Image 1 (spheres, one colour):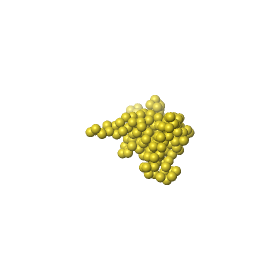
Image 2 (spheres, helix red, strand yellow; image 1 turned 90 degrees about the vertical axis):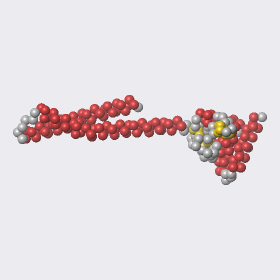
Image 3 (spheres, helix red, strand yellow; image 1 turned 180 degrees about the horizontal axis):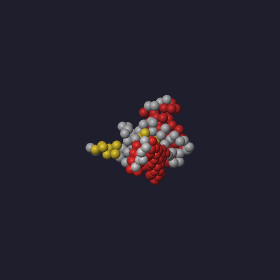
Image 4 (cartoon, rainbow, N blue to C red; image 1 turned 30 degrees about the horizontal axis):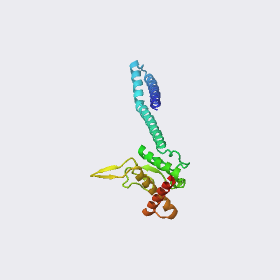
Amino acid sequence: MKGRLRRTSIRYLLSNVRLAVYVGLVLAWAAYYCYKFYDRDPTSYELFKMLVFGALAFAPIGVEELYDNYAAARKRRREQQAEAGKQRQHAPAAGLPPRTDLYVLGPPPFMHSVYRVLNELRDKTPARYQEVVEHLPKVVFDSSLESAGRSDGRFSLDGSGHIYRGGGWYTVNDYDAFRYIFLHEVGHNVCGKQRDDWSEDAADGYAAMVISEMAVSNQ
């Protein structure tokens, strides 16, 4: 892209230089006939001055055009980079059925924990796995959350290990804690949409039930 920008800039620069010279020549030609009209023969120096004056008079227009072109190219480049980044960030989770509005986005530890939960659900309780796909709008990491998770699919835990808060206090952040929070937020959506019950008790009951079902499937 840089090479294209450079070639474009040089091409427009040369084009503007040629146009400036043409304007200068036209002005010098007009000045020559003005001198002849008054029965004067202009000197070479006078014609050269008119040529230079015409080129300089056009220069601001050429520079502005060159800047506008370069700015437009930079804008297109930023838009392409933003679109490419958006496509990378919102890649569908591997192994999910063809439902394009469920996205997994976050740092590698978060992605690992999410995929682990999804694979565990798919292998042990396919019906619950399908509920996740159908009812959870997205799965993204958001460190700004004050809670561990939200029913809109945002989570502040990643399951990578306990978070020390100082003074002997820490936040439980292992895989089991993340899985429970994940299923709890799924439970909000499932119970809320199916039974119009958005309570914490309903979400806790759903998470405990799914974990129990997965434990039974291990036996």
